[in-house]
Structure formats: structure tokens, C-alpha cells
Amino acid sequence: MVFDRLLSISLEQIHADDDTFKISIEYLPDHLVHSIANLGILHPLWVQEITPSKFRIVNGFKRFKIAQLLNIAQLPALIISKAFNDFDNFNIRIREKCISGQLNPIEISYILSKLQEKFKMSPSDIMRTYFAAMGLGENIKIFETYDRLHRLEIEIQRAIIIGDLSVEIAALLGDTEVHERLSYFAIINKLKLSKSNQREFFHLLQDIKRIKKTSLENIINDQAVQSIINNERLTPTQKTEKIKTILFSWRYPRFAALKKQFESQLREMKLPPTVRLSPSPFFADSEYHIDLSFRTVAEFHNHLKILQQLEENGFILKLEKLM
Image (cartoon, rainbow, N blue to C red; front, side, top):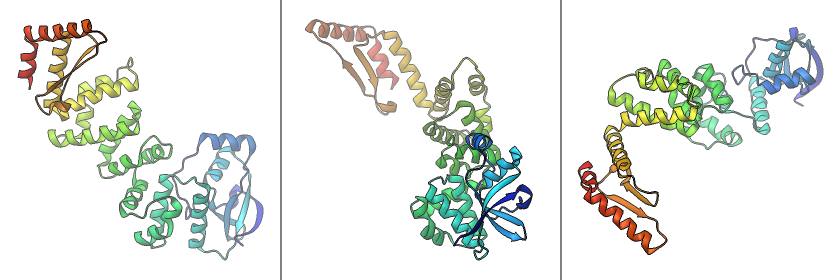
């Protein structure tokens, strides 16, 4: 049997510094704190006796920290048999997390780290033994993505746990310098970027950095960008779109210039909603498209007159020269 008995033990009986089986940062969800404050600890900690009346935690690090925070003197604990060694206990810990379906990306990363560093397992053995239970494909790129997460700064790890930062972008941030990833992470927080925008902003910023031969901090601290970030009248969504426009103009200057000129000419034309003029995607060639919406012959002939006036007023020639 895994457990010898159920006991009530005091905070002082737990070896607080033993993190052999700890697989995450010290993150205490508010809902768990409130639950324990109101109802007490309903699920016993899993502990193992290391010296007479002294125990180490195998499962329940958050509950223990909350008990310290709330000054709960006595804790219910299931005592794991001394017949189980460290590797046995760690496997019990992993299995419990997998069965509960509560394994987050940071916990996966710490598990991979400890399996390699403490228990000397190779990546191939880890993938073959654990990845299916974790819901991961047996792929070295997936392994490398998760393996680097626990090395990131605590605030970034916390953002991954609560779902504010995608694993994909977090892994890419792992390849950047500390000051750069913290600058980018600050942008994510200030603009409350969605995961799709996180990806787009990251690649735009990296491209601009390469093209302009500058630092990511210089790009982010540019006056045009900062004036938008600090504009309290704009919502995060509005700020995101405005900054994205600026970044696009720096990354694709020709496209941005053509788009600006085209939109200026479009405003001058004052076309009705039933006449839609559009360039080729990304102004890749000199072709334009006109869509007409009409219900009667009279409306159709009116559209033809509008198109004729465009030519007579020189707008068609301007469009030709634009490309």
C-alpha cells in the first residue's frame, strides 16, 4: 500500500525547505486560499516521514503554504510508506497530477527538469515513459519547448500558469536576452495581448530589430509607441491596433507607404458604399478590383457614370502611377 495511515500533524513537523517533489513555482490561486480559509484543508497532504515525527511533502505544497499564510496549526496528512524511495514518490506525484487533469505547462517543465537532473533520465526515456499520460506527442521539439519554461523569470511562469502567455511565445522568449524578454512581456501585460497578437507582435518586433539593427527596447521605447501606450483615453484593443499599424509600417515600409497613399486617394474619390475599390493583396502587383452592388438598371448606369468621372478627374491615372 502507498499510505500507512492518516494523521493530523503540525506545521512544525513538516520540513518546509525540502522541495524534492515540488514541481511548480510558489503560486497560490485566490480561489484555493479562500476555500481553505472558509472550509479548512479538505484534502490531506501526502507526506513521508524522514526522521521521527518529521515529514517531507510529496503532494500538497500549495496547501502547506496557505496553511502557513493562514496560521492553521494542524494539517491532515496521509503518510506514505517508507518502502517508497524518491523515484517512487516522484512517480506517484506525476501520476496523481496526470489523473487529475490539472497538469499545467510549468509543472510539466519542472517534471522534465527533475527527471533529467535528479533521476538522470534521458529525453527519449522521459518521452517514451511519460508523454502519453501528459497528453503530449513523443516529439523532441515538444520536449525542448516545455523543458525551457522553468528557466524563465517567475512573473513569466506565472503568466503561463494563468493562461495570459502562450507556451509557444514563452518558448521563443527563452531564446532571447533577459532584458529583451522582460521588455516584450511588459508590452503583453500593458496591452493585454491575445495569444494570436502575442505571436504577431513577437515576429514583427524581431524582424524590425533585425532590419533596423537596433534593440527591442529601442523599438518599444520609441516615442510614437510610448505615446500610444500611455494614452489613457484608448482601450487596450485600440492601443494594440495603433501600435500594430506602426510596427507594420516599420517592418513593411513600401507596403505601408502604398497603403497610406491608396487610402488618401480613396477618400478623395468619395465613392458610395455600393462601389468598392481594392488593390491586389499587399500591393503585390498593379491590378485593382472594383465591386459593384446594384438592384436596378438605373443604379448600374449610375455606377458607370461614377467610374467615368473617376477617369475624367485623373484618379485612374493616379492609381496606375501609384504602383
